[in-house]
Image 1 (cartoon, rainbow, N blue to C red):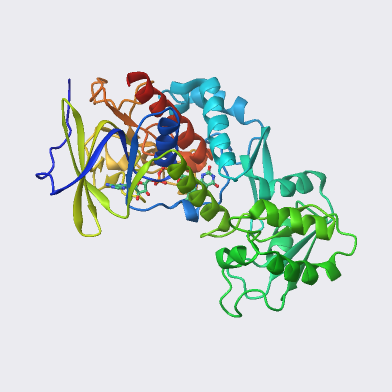
Image 2: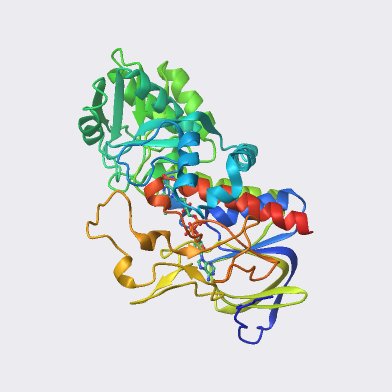
Length: 434
Ligand SMILES: Cc1cc2nc3c(=O)[nH]c(=O)nc-3n(C[C@H](O)[C@H](O)[C@H](O)COP(=O)(O)OP(=O)(O)OC[C@H]3O[C@@H](n4cnc5c(N)ncnc54)[C@H](O)[C@@H]3O)c2cc1C
């Protein structure tokens, strides 16, 4: 066995237990992997230094665009095949469409159990964003679905802004999106008694709309402006724990479909997603060690010992198998110096251009993207990380998410898809070994 795992410092004095699987990283990939494995009966611990999910739009992309193109695709499954053909080693190529579908279906079902509904269709749905641009995505939070429908029909739609709310200007949305959606108009309301003046954040407002009294204030303020509009678009504020109840209440009172417009981070949709995943962790008994970095990993015949620094204390978590889902540069899953991209925790081999000169193309906005964004850890079909010579590093070690090589999720618009699908496969492989 070719094993480059670094042997960390001597274990600290807190012994946190023994699990079937330890997942390092609690972003979308790590969370999904933990839930897929736990829902199949494995005991799972997640260790993560924090989660950027509350910053995300809440949309789940499968594939939005071929590298080199500038336009969104409507046909994600066809484009996915093209993506696999065009780049050997793409993570989707290791899974195939059938497994990717099962991963999405399974993940959306897990979220639905926690009260967070998504709508996925065969085609990519188009929605307008809080800056008035159009985005195509595969699975939308149910709270945004009516927006895709209204956009497709170009319904006469009222975009409602709330005075003082951070990150959302109804006029800007209507003006910018007006070129592709002529039936838009905008109004700014100031519902008395809703939100604290001067301190209006989407998440806080969303929590106020969990309460019927808060919704009534919003409804009263919108009603005089309805004036024949066929739909109402709002910032992402339609409830937090009770978002479906809030939507239903507001829609039935206004008598037209209402929808949330994906907003600037942090967004209520991202927070809802994080909270739904945390509820699912509790449901499936996933142990969470969040708020500190894993500083060392050692492995022996019995499995892995993961040392994490949590609230100033060293905690050692041991498990038979490990899934690495530490993301890319932003979360620290990959690091780069002047000439090399590295994987800092296990010192895994990182596939990358031979020299730094090849990292970037001359044109920053080149639609083909930059080679450095495709650097990452290579994996086999079971999501085992591979060494430079193509051999499996350790049969009990798996990798999932954006840390993987040969994909450029930002350009392909495949972020959530790659995370969910590779997490599914890694968890499936762990279950197969149990
Ligand atoms: C602002 C924003 C908007 C997005 N919008 C979309 C969208 O519209 N559509 C879409 O499909 N996707 C979107 N995504 C992408 C998606 O949510 C996922 O972030 C992406 O798929 C990558 O997930 P990941 O879990 O692989 O990595 P990450 O999300 O980076 O998670 C990795 C986690 O591991 C942690 N970590 C790293 N090293 C260690 C360590 N040593 N010890 C402990 N923890 C560690 C990091 O802190 C991080 O929390 C968005 C993401 C962001 C941030």
